[in-house]
Figure 1 (cartoon, rainbow, N blue to C red):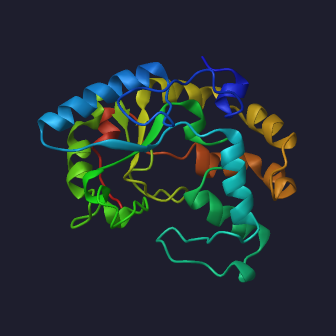
Figure 2 (figure 1 turned 30 degrees about the vertical axis):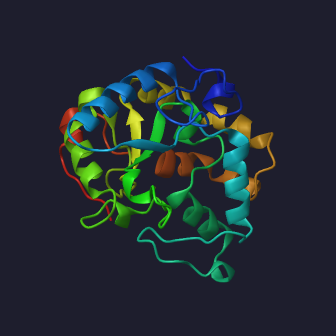
Length: 240
């Protein structure tokens, strides 16, 4: 069980680093154990696997959010088209941000259960940089082989894809894995009250609108994920 501070990224006592990847990547201990087993299995199959991002704290998520809200970073539609910031109302800005970036306090990356993965080999020479966009995981993309392997085997190690398909909330993210057992528990703990208390005390851009609409935003973007059961996991696969 995580504390409210841990759930919302305001504490990091629940996460650790591991020699299997760079020290800035942190996850809960059991998640690293499962990831290490998956990493070894992938290597045996000739597939390279690395973590681009693990735990992300509240302040980092707040900085991302505030930059986007104030038009200092681009906003995109669910299909990846860049939006005209000057033409958007507050609600449209919030929706555009939450399609690709989580609300501070509401990110699954706060829990230490979720990780963004990629194939490091195509990027090793430094001639291309990882963007974490669906095209990189589509056929012909540098991470396509990895995406196919994970589609077949991630569930063997306790992981699932919460954004396997676009369901009208968060855009499809073929790089985003979640450790089923601990993430399901954390999601149940992240109540509307916990999230509301966290945001009310923080300097988050658009806070008045967010608090007014928080129940709907939580339902539409935070709780609206693809199923974590094997039956649901195999019901379809659609990135892009």
